[in-house]
Length: 403
Image 1 (cartoon, one colour):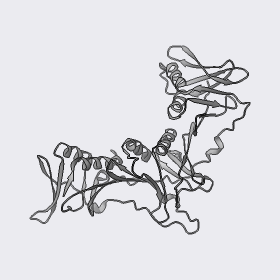
Image 2 (cartoon, rainbow, N blue to C red):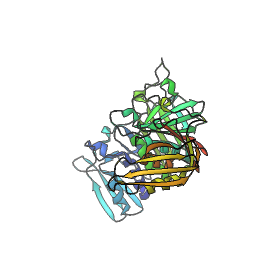
Image 3 (cartoon, rainbow, N blue to C red):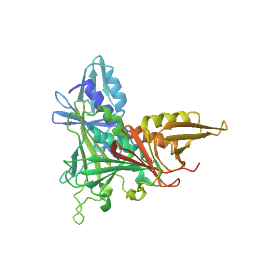
Image 4 (tube, rainbow, N blue to C red):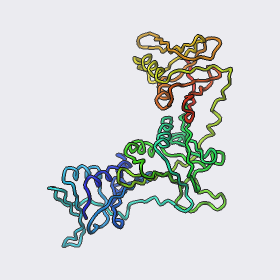
C-alpha cells in the first residue's frame, strides 16, 4: 500500500489529539489503521472522544494495524520520503508483521496491537440532528467556552451548553459560577432530533476536552468545504419522549482539514445544565451604566494590574457622572493603590463603585467584539450585564467582588 507521506503524517497527528498522556491502556494510546475501500481510516479514541481521518492510498491494502505511538510514527515518516509504503507480510512461523519503507527508511513494525480491541462510537444516523456551520459559528462556540468551569464537583458546568432557543436560533452558554458567557448562533438548515430547547432538557453539554481539541483544529478547518455539526445516539430514540436518553447522546463535527476528511465525536456530559436565565440581570434605564471603548478598557486593566502578584486580582470601577471611568487596584506587596482614568459614557447621578475580578473582566474584553462595551448593574452587590452595542449576539454576566 502506497500513501502520500505528508497526508499520512497529518492524519496521524489529527487523530492523536485525543490521546492523553495519563492513559495506561495500550489501545487508547494507539491510532488504528483500517483500509476502507480506496481510503485508509486513521482512528484514535480515549473512550470519551473519537477522531477519525481518511486518506487515499494505492495498491493492495495491508491488514488492520494499531500504531502504539502515532506521533512518533508521524515524525519518523516525515524524515523519510514523500511516499510511504506499508505492507503486510506473513513470516515462516505464521505470524503477521508490517514492513514500512519511506524514502531511505526501511523497517518492520513489530509492536502493533490487535484492532479488534479498538472501541468505536457508532452514532444512530436516522433522524439525528445535523446542521451546517461556518467559521463565525465555530468561533462563537469557542469564545463562549472561555467561561467553562474546571470544577469537578459541578461536572455539568465542565462544558458548553448548546440548546435551541427558537426555530433556527440556538444558544451556546458556559459558566463557572463567577461569570457567564452566552452566544447566539443561527442554524437555518438544522434538522432532526438531538438538540432541543432548554425548558424541556433537550440541549447538549459539549465537554471541555472536545472544545479544547476543536480549538487546536480551528485554523486547519477548511470552511470552503461543507462543515457540519451532528448529534445523535448509538440507540434509537426513546419512543415515549421521541428523544434519545441524554446519557448516551453523542456530539460531533465533520469537516475537511485541507484535503483530509475528519470526523470528531464525543460523548456529551450526562447532567442537567442549571437554569442560567435566572442569573441574567434585568436592565433598566435608571440603573448605573457605562459605555467604554473595549480596547481602551483592556489597556487600562493591563496597566493597573501589571505588578499585582495575587492570584485573584480585584479591580474597582468608579462610574463618574462627568464622563470618566476610574479603575483602581491595590498592590498589597508595595502597599500602594494605583488609579487610572479613561473616557467613558456614564449614566449615574453620583459616583458609583463596583469591584470585579480583573482577569475575568480582561477576558471579556478579549472575547467580546465591537468597538464599545456597556456595563450595567443594579447595585454594587448585583451581577453586571456586559455586552457590546455593536455585537449583540454575545452577552456576558460577571459577578461582583467585595473590595
